[in-house]
Amino acid sequence: MLRSTFVPSYAIFLGLIALSAFSSAQQSGAVGEPLEMTTASPPKGYLHQPYEFQLEARGGISPLEWEITAGVLPRGMKLSQNGHVTGTPSETGDFRVRVTVTDSGKPPREESRELVLTIVAPLLLEWSRYPQVVGRRVECAIRLSNETGDNFDLTVAALAVNEIGRATAVGYQHFVLQKNTTDMELSFGENLPPGLYELNLDAVAEVPEANVIHRARLVADKLQIQQGP
Image (cartoon, rainbow, N blue to C red; front, side, top):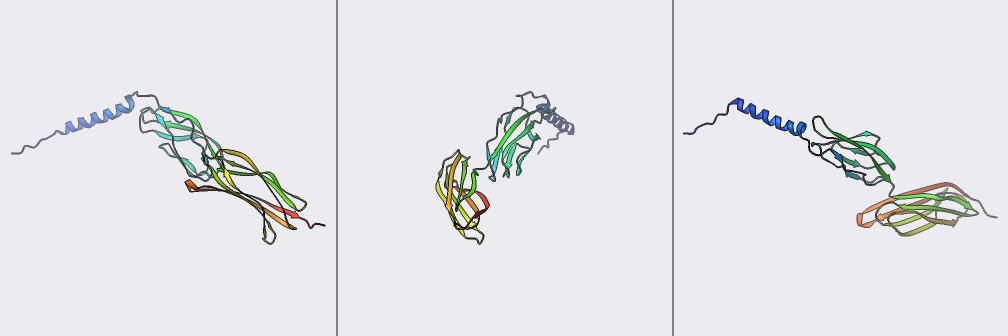
């Protein structure tokens, strides 16, 4: 004959109380290691490039919860409660934020730290000598910076476009721009027929092994070439 086993309801009740007490003790009674944020500084990010980074901490009672308590991240980026920084930044600069991590103890423990997230343009292009007209010649110079850890297969082209849309080449360069290069200067100049011009200078940087392309452009308009004697 089969014999059924009956567990009194009060025994189940006592078991649930014990389990709850054990879980509570883990949170409120456990000492463990102190809560400590181990992320000292997030890595540099690049303008218009996807960014992903995990903030880290040790000690405390899991789960941990993260939040920004002062400052703001660049536009296009966010910090999730699990400490995951993600997004595609749409502005450059040094962004100082105070990040606070809180554990699940009762009472909870927390630690705060100021972090600086730097966002740069991978390919930085700027005038070092703004375009000017010298007689019938347009002359200018630019500064180039490669702020990444990759070498760029770089093409730079300068075109002067007159009022009827005719384009004249003012300069062309194709070379490897080495990683972590700052403020490399290039000069351009060319004689042009009379007319009113807009100068377009375009730089295209390719990283073939990563299938990545960076672009930058400078524009200068109202460059008047007078009819010579």
